[in-house]
Each structure stands twice: as structure tokens, then as C-alpha cells.
Image 1 (cartoon, rainbow, N blue to C red):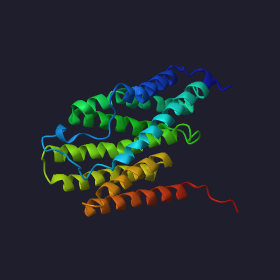
Image 2 (spheres, rainbow, N blue to C red):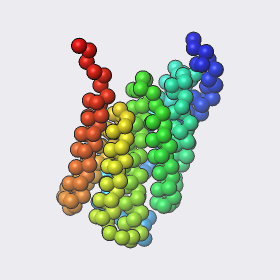
Image 3 (cartoon, one colour):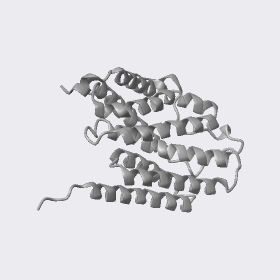
Image 4 (tube, rainbow, N blue to C red):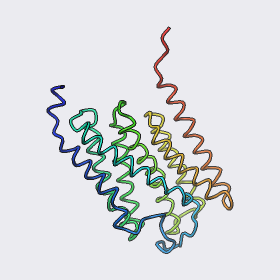
Length: 247
């Protein structure tokens, strides 16, 4: 066994598992969350164009399950693995406060937006620290989580702007949020081989297309272009990351 491996204290692996457990169980102590309600805003947000179709929130089942499996695998199989260790602190800093997010969202969209941005930034930090190996056990679930948070964080910005009657209205804020989500996602998928991240973000963007096809074709078109752009950039990065073939 490697000396460096034996010197790592497993406490972070334990805390990561506990944080993931509290995060996964948090919906059970609330009424759940499928988007803010219209009356939570000074300008009621009834079917806002920035919000994905309701079915998209089902991805949380996959995110919860895979994060829990990842945390369990990390605790029982990789507790002293240095390759996993650097991702654990930012993941704890994201998941532990995230366990309170649903409750906060039911009380205040503004504070929920602040919290979800904290969750996103620390999740992206964790994603950047994941090792290339064990990707299915760590990078993929963290990527799913961070990819959905990317969309959700920008959606929250769009809802706050439109819901408080600032600036360009619902359509303008939807376009701004989609641009922000695409810019964030484009940077991530161009720098990391993060399949889970790209998949979750594309899932959210396609759900915005579905939500807007009947009444807001411009928003649907921009969301579709953003999803296509993420697909292109993710595939291009994956191709460039392939090792050269031997002659």
C-alpha cells in the first residue's frame, strides 16, 4: 500500500458521505420542490419562459442516487485515496448547505438564489478536482449535479430579474439566463471531459425548449441552439482529448 495513501485521514470521506446523506434525505423533510410558485415574486411568475418543463426535475432522482452511491464507494473503497481527497472539501461545502436549499426556496427566492450559486461554485470546484480515473464513481455524479446546478442557478437569476420587474421583462431575462448558462457550460465542457455535466445541462436546456415551443419560439430557439452548442463543444473536447493513435 502506498505510504501517501496510508497517511490520509478518512475523516473527509466520512463527512462527504454524511453530507451526501443529509442532502439526499432533505426532500423527505419538506414538501419537495418543482419550481418557485408565482406568488413568491412581486411580479407573479406564472409559466415563466426561463423555467424548464416540469418533467426535467425528475433528474434529481438520478442525481441523488448517484451522489449517494459515489459517497458510499468513496467511503468504503477510496477513503484514503489521494486522488479523491482534493474533491471532498468542495463537495462537502456544496452538499451540506444544499441540504437546506428546498426549505430556503420555499421561504425566499432571493436567498435561495444566493445559496444555489454557492452550491454551484463549490460543485464546479469539486468537479475540477475529480481525477480522470474512477470517472464513473466520482466525476460523472459530481458532473450531473454541477450541470443541473448551472442551469438552475441561471434560471434563478432570470426569475429574480423578471419577478422583481427589473429591466427587459420575462423574455429578456430568459435570454440572458440562457446565455449565462451556455457561457458557463461552454467553458466547463471545453476544459474538462465531463460527460455527466454536459448531459445534465443539455437535459435542462432541452426542457426549456419543450416548455417554450407553444408560446415563446425565440426562447425555445435560443435554448435549442445552446443545447446544440454544448453537444458540439463536449464532443470536440472528447475528440481532442483522445490519445494519438500509434503508428
